[in-house]
Each structure stands twice: as structure tokens, then as C-alpha cells.
Image 1 (cartoon, one colour):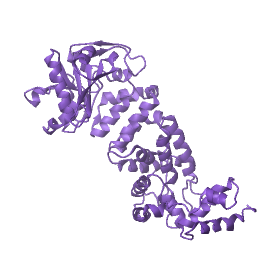
Image 2 (image 1 turned 60 degrees about the horizontal axis):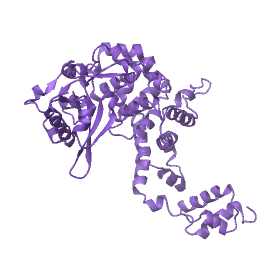
Image 3 (image 1 turned 90 degrees about the vertical axis):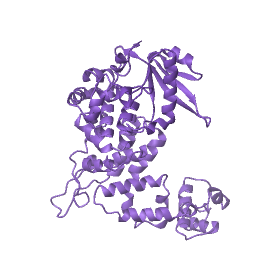
Image 4 (image 1 turned 180 degrees about the vertical axis):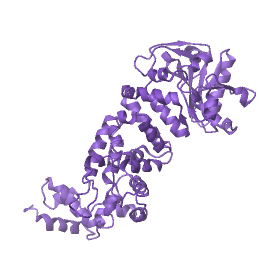
Amino acid sequence: MKDSWKDNSRYKAAREIVVAVRAAGYKAYFAGGCVRDLLLGVEAKDFDVATSATPDVVMGMFAKTYSVGAHFGVVLVCTPEKDGGEIATEVATFRHDGAYSDGRRPDAVRFSTDPREDVQRRDFTINGMLFDPLADSHEAAILDFVGGREDLTHHLVRTIGVAKDRFTEDKLRMLRAVRFAARLEFEVDVQTSAAIKALATEITQVSLERIRDELTLMLTEGHARRAFEMLYELGLLQHILPEAVKMHGVEQPPQFHPEGDVWVHTLLLLEKLKPGASAALAWGALLHDIGKPATFRPPDPKKPGDRIRFDGHVEVGVRMAETILGRLRFSNEETEQIVALVKNHMRFGDILQMKESTLKRFLRLPKFDEHLALHWMDCMSAHGDLKLYEFAKERYEAAPVEEMRPKLLVTGRDLIAAGYRPSPQFKEMLEAAEDAQLEGLVTTTEGGLAVVKAQWGEPRDA
């Protein structure tokens, strides 16, 4: 355990809360993931406090609080910072949970004064330890009633108590077990794995938004490949993303994909996602070839030299991606970028033959850096040839904004002023004028209008 976390402002805010609650005669400790991270020497993002004080007592002790789950004993305590901001610390009362009839939250809770009883309701042993920030030594600071330190030592994710009971209470814990094991590079213990396999079909009882959020975390925490391998091995993937399971065993032409089938190729992309990757890039990597299983065509034995083909897999993949993202309740903005990544990932193959205007339109796609990143991963997970990537990267980084997206020489007003009547053809006319401008063929409005007249005739003839 490192001492550097003592300089963390969130640690200090949480410690002040513990000091105040203890001074009032109540028990208080750090709880949950922050304790696990402290023991692992990892920077904790948040410091949660567990206490014997009830929510009304906690809210009466501090100047600014919010009741975010008083029924479950959860209060946010806000601590002011010197820069005018504030730190929100979650403070939860020790409790014992009743039945979970909805497979998500307890129907009722009973507050407790015993920390031993409180930790028994938590999910995994590595998340069930308490930490006393006022203790004299690191060793004395840890309160471990569930064997969490031993499981940390053995790199195990194990439920507290009976695995089936913990997962029956909250089905999302099955996905959390996978995420923790992947992120920490741990294994899921035998009994916990068996319970997940037995209850995997019930993961569909979890809201689609919660499933989406857990999958996004798996994809962006730096261990996406391992997470999705485990989802498949434990029988969860077929119930939350059946389209991905169909990539298994779908062969690819070895001259382009010596690495193996579509699933192997996709896993290799996921392996290259760095911690903190954007959700759009991560989902783009996962779904970029989602249309291949449906478009697989084996070599025609009557045609010597024919190969495996996936004709139309991009178009099919776009439709499938839209369906998946809609099902998982992604926002319109997120959906637009992920679908764009799927739609455009094969266009790099034509980049050396593109007209200048087409190339500039391609390079100015929103967040083109993500298109570049996906193409790099795609190449490095297959043939390894980065020629097209290097060309696109060089042109993208070298081209000034005014060259990529110059002020238009011809606008709709210019067409009207020239005598053209507004019509559906306006879009094509404007694109033709802009293409000529991007190609460097015209440099004035008159020149752009001449291009329009050459294709559509004089205004009276258009």
C-alpha cells in the first residue's frame, strides 16, 4: 500500500467525514472499491464511507448534503474546495438487505450498527473490505470479514457468501464479475463461475441501459479482449449480444486475414483498445465486421482462384449496428459516430484512387482521428500493412482546415440569384460546384456556376 493516496483531495474529504462522524459517537470507515484499490496500490477514483449513523443524522451533521437514496441509507456529503468547487462523497448507513424481487434492488432494508452485517450484503470479497483512515498502521486499518485480502493475493473474484444468492439478488453482478476480473487481470473462482453459467439466461432481466454501461466500461478500461472472451466462456454474450457470438468460426480469406476467423480478428482489435478509449471507437471496433457472418460466401469451386467473400458486409453491418445500438438505448450522437465508423472502415482501401474532392470529404468526416485509429487496429489485427494508414494520416495531419473545408464559392443563394428555381436538384448542383472547388478547378463563384451550367444547362433549361 502506497502513502501517496493521502494527498488525494477525495481521500482527505472522506477522511474529514470519518473524523466528524466518529466525533459524534458513530462508527465510520472507508468501504468498497477504494479499499481494494488502496491495497493494490492503484489510484482510487472515489472514496465511499460506510457508517452506523442513519441518513437523517448524517444530513444533520454537514452543511451541504443530498439524499440520493435515503431508503437505502445513501447520502452525498459535499465538501468545499479552495478553488470554489466541491467534492461529493457517498456516505451509506450499515444495513441488511431484504429480498430482491426485481433482481436489481432490495425491496426493503434494515439499518444496522454492525459493520460485519453490512459487508455481507456486498457483491465480491475484494469489494467487501473496510478501511479505518484513523488507524495507527496500514495493517490495523484493514477490516476484512470476508476474506478479501486473501482473494486479492490469489487474484480471484469471488462472491461474498453463496454465489447463486448474490447473483439472484442483482443479476448485473454477473457482468461486474467479468469486468473486475478482466480489468484487474484476475480469475473468477470456480463456484462463482458455475453460478454465472447457471444463471446466464437471467441476465436479460437487467435493464438494457445498465447492460450497455457495463459493456462500455469493459470496452474502455483497457482489457476488452479478456472481458469479451469471458463473456463468451461464461455464456453471457449470447444473451446480451447474440450478433457477436455469430462471428465465431466464420472463416476469412487467409491472404488478407492470416490471423483467423472474424471473432479472432475482432478480439485482436479489442486487445488494442487502450484504457480511456472513447466509447464510440471501442464500439466501432467491436461492431466493424458485425455484418460478415450474414454475408459470408465460400469460394466457388467452379472458379479457380476464387476466395471467401463478404459482399455487402458494410451495408449489412450498418443496419445491424443501428439495431444493436438502438436496442441498447445509445444516444443519437453516439449512434451516429459508431455507425459512421462501421460505414467507412472499408473506404481506406480506395484512398489512393480517390479524386481529390472525394479524399478531402473523407478526411473531414467528424472525429476522423477515430476513423484513423480504427483503421490502424484493423490493419494490425490482420495483414499488418500500414501503407494506406500512413498515407491517410499524413494527408489528414498536413491539410489545413481551410483546404479541407473551404468557404463555399457557390451557395443556394448564388443559384437563386443566377436564376435557378429551388428544387431537389440544388443539392447535386452544390456538390458539383464544391467538388470542382476542392479539386482546385475553380476559384471563383462565377467558375462554380459555370460548372453547374455545364451539367444542368442555363436556368431556363434546368
